[in-house]
Image: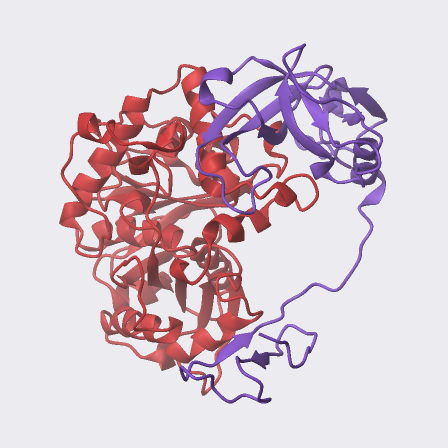
Length: 182
Length: 367
């Protein structure tokens, strides 16, 4: 199929069809297909706190921030999730941490981070008082448990661009784990 | 004319006077949203012998993400009729929050009736993708965690903290689907034992198939009336004597998933504990969430339903869970039991957002 036109905007449609003719005519099976281009053509700043967290990921580091009562929040937020007070300075945490909850996905969806069976996990990095959501690449549901020690498996330096996917997955901490900060 | 019970919130007593819902089905390919709503709107007005001219305010709840077109909800107004124009509003949430907006609107005192409706053809989209888009856009949504996976994390936390067992999840599912046998609008109803259900495979461990809500195409509508107008329209209005909603942080890892402080706070404000709860309709799409909500509401936690409070006699969202209508249906099902005289005091709950992030609690009473 070849795109015949491209109109940006939420309410616009452009039509496609098979074959070599142009326009909205139906293909041989008389089924008209329409491509609906829906996009959000803006770029926006992620702000001083999430921005610092994502920059930290690019540098292979995990950052949190101090919240009310001195607790450390990861990922950092501009305000404390419980008290709504402004949060304080950024602090480095982890990189190792402890699994506080997990769920085993035997059949990941195409959009999921890994294309093989994987666990979702809440990981509380050392020095943090909240948990981070990510995938746990342990290979099997028999090798994941609440309380297990894990560490982030970062993409190699140069492939990291400052997004949550810069962490490929969390993996078991210690010599058994693969990869590392590149 | 009897007197309406004094509401805990607001100055003006407001009641549910009529409720209707479409048959809940897995995939309705024969009707678009307007066609799905038309008979529901007709029934909710017809129950009272009124027409569109008798409606003071209209509020609806749905999500444009199912169709993938902004402002697609506007077209649904055709089910009511757009001329002459009526004051109208919409929430991109479950229609239980549209009911809340209508309740606030009725407090103004210049209109006496409000139509609330919600609809969702879940079959139009991939909820695993769509509902990931309601998460934090920087640190969560890019990973595409789906609602089943997040509910499974919550279930794991309950198991790890000794607050539930996998058998409890199965008992909730078995009881709910058994109750649904008496609900002609239910989508999933069966009589199977918890033992039988525990033989199913995991979808996302520790959740088996039975602990998940069905994907549902459905729609529902409620009529609200204030003050004396409620008694004119309905012999036994279901008075909303308490209503409140609260939200928790979107930072999932900063929440204790084994509890629901937002539900507890809403229940406290709505006055749940001020009297006996004969029936509670809980919007707990995943079986483990019923246990979390019962604790938060101060109700006995009994997955088999042996307690003095009847939990989800309609079958609840495990029997049918149309996106953006499922919460309103909880209010409607609870209210219907007041209106038909079966009970006198009920509690309805609705949820929105990931893993019970936001919760609405309403207490309804007969006069």
